Image: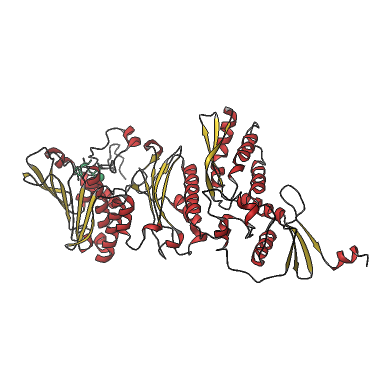
Length: 561
Ligand code: ADP
Ligand code: MG
């Protein structure tokens, strides 16, 4: 053992080794090269970007752009590690307007392949040609070339047999390449993209709008299948398209979430959207959507993984809740074939007259149409409806007397409390109420849960509460009453422990359809089934009796047998 105090076992790694290590994270397969070079071309403001690949990118990847190009000096510098023109100081990380910022893509690619660069700025007469092979610079010279930039990547991983071997068939790699190509092409429909594989032009996407770009890449979808989403909230702006449940391609696995025009995997948001669609699509199918969130750059952190495909959001919970609520509303408004269950109303068929007023909201699909697509009928039972409101049904040896209105309120109440997603409907005329700053802060505390429960509440400058959406099915006229209750709850010093119950009670009361009813046998079965699942099937949320059971014994008592 040595006792030398100056013993040095730790070495600072040479640049070439550092680049190879970084490459391990940045360059996993040809598709990573497609992504990085494509992003650089977009950052370079190119309006035309062409990709050529051979053998799934294993033999060649070439990307040409018509962007701003590089000066001779930059053309040499760009392969240095941490060489970037996109940020200068740490602060810049929180006001990013570009895809790149780590300055390691070109260094990493050049460490594991043979790379050739041709670049010229439009204002220069002569361009620059650089060749760098597995981390070693071979050439740097002036050249005549088109303005913009061309990068050619050959022999990817050739000197790393393990990596080379881990690549899949040409076809599989080609598919991965296309996937990255799509993820670049969707958020930039205003730019021209082309993709060649083994010399064949696979995609030619001239500048267009988002819907046309989506349809160009998804020829099996019809225009009608795409439902636009566009909404501005206090935390983000979202626009894009969702595909209706029944139009979703069977077995679809992919969906497209972009944050600040960058393709992002955000499992918790994607999961929330999946949950929303789940009752509406087969289990093995994922919803298909293209949603573009714009979030202020200082409220999102992209620097989570080297490939920058994950993001941390400052207001993740709120954004997730608001986004699901927005998508839910868009679906509710545009889709008439959603089963009634999704709206959490028992299948009660109504005489059109007394309820017509309640259901006239222009944003809610007509109740009758939804009901006609209710779940398949269950076996019919005997029932009798008295005075349009009280139901008598026979179950085994017993007869049950049920107040349908109370039962309906109870079912709505429990569902609301259980946290089953609630569809919401936007209000044409939002309800307004003045509030104090103390109320504002309590209401802000309630906001995320309210949104999940179908209530979109905005707090304006801490002085005014604005209710923009209420649970679907509630008459819009009840919005001011709901807002009143919310403001009342927020009058306390802290949130009352039972505020959710209080709110649920109101919503159940306003949401329950009013008698007189007409009921089909199926509706009676559904009502009975839903009621039986309630924690308290015997009392309405306000404590009224919902049902009585008459059996032989009680009848004998009644008749003094
Ligand atoms: P980053 O994109 O994170 O800055 P890269 O290694 O991808 O890092 O690129 C390094 C630098 O090279 C960029 O910051 C940019 O200045 C320059 N560059 C790369 N590709 C292009 C291109 N296609 N057109 C113009 N400049 C480019
Ligand atoms: Mg880059």
